[in-house]
Image 1: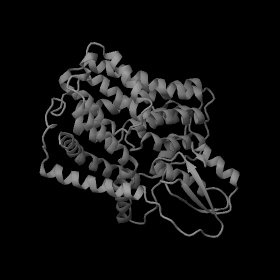
Image 2: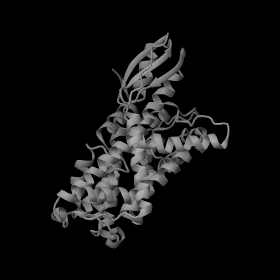
Image 3: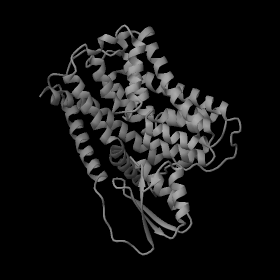
Image 4: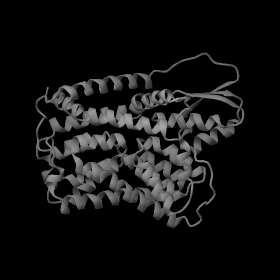
Length: 405
């Protein structure tokens, strides 16, 4: 029963802020035109690195969702530095995760997290630019995910609600649930003070967190309750911050695709910037910042062994649960249709979220001879209406970081 109470309390704390974050994410999608990103990310130089980081921080893309977007940026003229900056900054934060961080971990974490993402993204991007002396300076179209054109304000509102409360929930829903369950399990089953062994060895605790966080995938929002639960068991705020940075941005899948798409040196700089930056900022938190900045009521030990849910939080929690159920049903329900004339069916492997799906559909649709493309995310089945060159189809899919089954 204590496990259930802990899980419900965490959902209640996060729900209002998550719903707000989903709404803002939808507004960004529907009202900020794709050409805005194209104009500002497809130019070489230091300023492009800065803008890539600034644009990436609020975008609600997980690491799997940002990969095809960043690969397309590079393919269509963005410098390696700008692409790397975008890759580092985007998965660490997002409007939704910043709001959720504030709700569970307080304002200090909510402020430091995007600032750290900006700083590490800039450093990583500039290091890559330094290695890549021959930056491409041509101004080419960047292949970002555009909202469908709507004729009026009401249509854009509809697009915003659909993207924020359906597609965004599909993208992070599974990982949010996993993060909450892991967090509740840590809270209930790990003894209090379990991590006090590391109290005198902050650097050792951060290295241990990195060793767990890098192979593990957890989205920026899903990492929040896990970090909270570890702090409840004695982990320092700095070590918890390392999890918040390294968990969402540095995982094996991301590293492999970055290495393949941008080169091994870029992948090494990408991983090193995230890990070293996370540890450096974590040490600053533990040694130079007041501990009370990182002590919220839940971190202090309250609201974990009994229900503490207000009316507004309860309504938001119920709505969030309904959205999660709806999104997961949509995501894992295959829609079968009759095979049409001149239709090819292939299997694309490696897609994990709605952004991956959108990038495959959009890039394949640009090939000569393609009339339409439909991708089923759960199975990877991709139906191509028309007669494109099979070699060109394979090349597009592999350039995006995926593979054909």
